[in-house]
Length: 114
Length: 113
Image 1: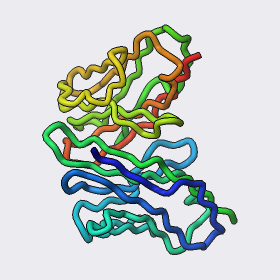
Image 2: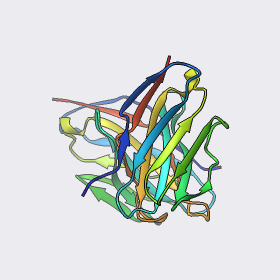
Image 3: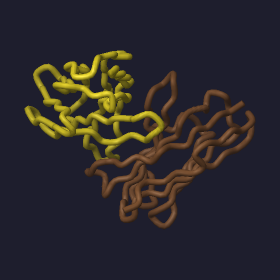
Image 4: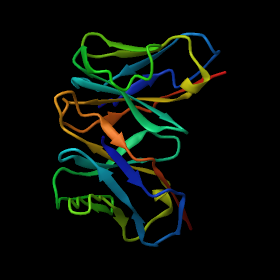
């Protein structure tokens, strides 16, 4: 079946540090890949996406590149801020006739200290 | 415009009681999804609607769970004879149709005592 594995947290960084959150996937076929973010007390928000191999999704200084050869979609940011503290979820969608349900990883909590 | 809304935001119920959770999708979105977020299981897909029909109910964990959607808009997730393991945050999402991005509501936190 389809699955998403991401690094366990919490990840604790100082402000302006470099961030990497690893995400790998297993899928039958070619999925679209997503990063969602959940800020404290808020709902899930789409952060970025990539729909085919070698695509790079980017938003708010975050980037992730769809790597088919390594089945990965690692999230990176060059300089994190305290306001980036949140839980980050990697997810995939496999297009099929039934519908586009998201398959999520377990989530990684990021804590950024001033 | 208005996003996905869910009600109630919090629900505490006694084991064995039935509960109804409501989702109002973004206007014009034909696809609607229910997910569950719990400590032990992470984020799990429950059911998907396209219009009023549910072509995929594969994620419903037991026959105590059911959902319906009327008028291609509001959806209700019903859990009968609630159990403690049903305690979770129930999330609803909608999209323009099944190939577009999903927008999530704030969730309903269900606690079964």
